[in-house]
Length: 318
Ligand SMILES: O=P(O)(O)OC[C@H]1O[C@@H](O)[C@H](O)[C@@H](O)[C@@H]1O
Image 1: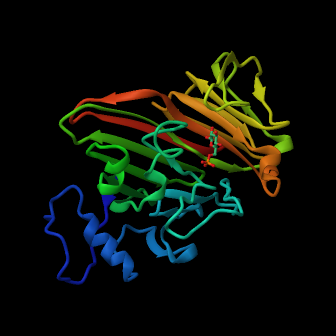
Image 2: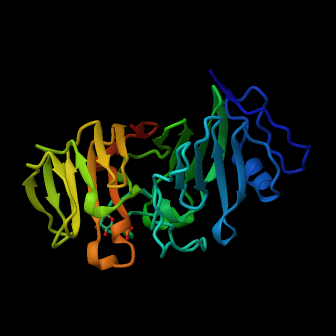
């Protein structure tokens, strides 16, 4: 059974007025403020520390020996280590941790509210803004944290809607689950598309992705703005060169062989599409070391006022 973390906060003048029986005991102003002074007020296995570039990150540690790191900037999971110490995720060497540009070059960056290309900046704004901590909890020893993003003047300058995004990251012994919930807080409908742009550590020559045979494809190579329609005929997709392809109607589970001796099940609910990407020679320094297998919602989601959309992803070493 899940238990929300009980606060051990000293009394502080800026503590929010949330009541003790509120389902979300940690309101974001309170937790972000505490994070900045480095005090431990979270559920067991959840801590805040200073990451690269001095940016705050959340460290999740399970009693089984698995670990994960999530930056508040972009709500970007940058590391997921299974108990043998292997990190299943990859961060490119050119990743920037300066709180200005997205840490989009690794881990699990968000693409929201636009996958792109489109009228907004590539992959939307959620990956290059600070999220806040809404809650932390522990379930049978497994820690989880929920991050929150709401509209502000920056988001409204690109996408003039009131919304709430809640992103729960749960760590288990050999798996990491994420749940993204988007709610329309506006009084008019809005639409969006989205993806989790996951970078997996890999040895690209040995990589294959199974489960996509029969899917309709939109190949963004050579022109991302005019993708070529097709159908995937292969049991296992390999990466002998540049790959940038959308798969519509992808199944609820893909199996990634990362070429490093690991098989990873990538499961989802509601992420109805998938994207495979490897830049090949365009990123000569690192393309051999990763592959992006992205759970995506390319076909537009429309939400009426007060409606929510929820999508889950699970990455599991099998
Ligand atoms: O460098 P970015 O903005 O993170 O995007 C990387 C790639 O992300 C993929 O998801 C897109 O399909 C590609 O077209 C894009 O080039």
